[in-house]
Each structure stands twice: as structure tokens, then as C-alpha cells.
Amino acid sequence: MNHFLALGLTLGAALTPPGARAQTAAPSPKYVRTPTGFLLVLRQGDNVLQELEQLATREKIAGASLTGLGFVHPTFGFWNGQTKTYDPKSFRDTELASLTGSIAWKEGKPALHLHGVVTDKTFAAYGGHILALEVSTGSVEITVTQHPQRLVREVDERNGATVMSW
Image (cartoon, rainbow, N blue to C red; front, side, top):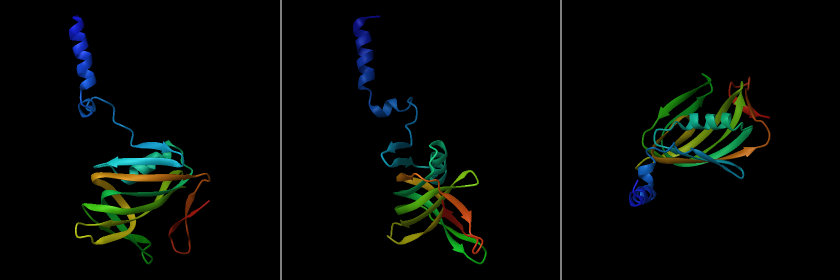
């Protein structure tokens, strides 16, 4: 092979814009380890609850607190003490102004407890217990702070709610 052609191919690869190479590269990880836990950056279409459950399982997180923000399609639930179920309400195209919650375990599986506040384009705010959460446009950033003790969730027989203990 001609040395000039080889040099041109090498330089061409080196000068290819990063976005062009991303098409053949493996997908980048959705989280990185931090000194206190993890930072997740989720993208459009990601199921936030599923990603958190996978992180807890994969990294064997004993227990954690979390906080986040971003752009989402949420489904909130309001606890109905009479029926012992959540009354759901879904929204589209909202900005997640605040996400807070915890990761514990119930029956060998991650058990999330998340609350949030979102705003719409009129700046009206809605919030409550999060039943479902999908990333809409942009991204969602979540900081997970690990705890050393294992946290568990159990049903409180007095009211039927699932509560945390250790």
C-alpha cells in the first residue's frame, strides 16, 4: 500500500467527527461510579424506574437515596387509604424540577420509592408518588448516594402501605 494513502487513511480516521464514529461504537454506559455512589444520565425513551432497578441489581446496592432532574413523561399516584392502591394520573412533556427517593429491597428485588415534582409549559406544577417515569426530550440526571446498611421494604399491616426498615 502506498505510504501516502496509508497516512491519509490514518489521518482521515483521526479527523472523523466524534458523532460519526459513535454509529459503530458500543453504546456509552448510562452511569458512572462517584465517591458516594453513582451518577446516571438517561436519554430519550429510557424507562427511569427500570434503569434504577437494573443499577441496584448490577451493582449490588444495599440501600441508597437519590435525587434527580430532567425532562419526563411521568405517571404519579396518590395513595388511596381506603382501597390501598394508588390513584394514577399521567402527564406528557414536562420538566422534572425535583426527583427524590430511595432504593431498598423487597422479596429479593429492588424496591424503589420515588416522589417528584414536574412543571408544564405554563409553569403549573404537579407532583406525588412516581408510578412510571420515561425520559422525554433531553435527558434525566440522577445522583444515587449509597448507604452501607441493607434497606428493606415491608407492608405495614396497620395501613397496607409499604414502608422502609433496616
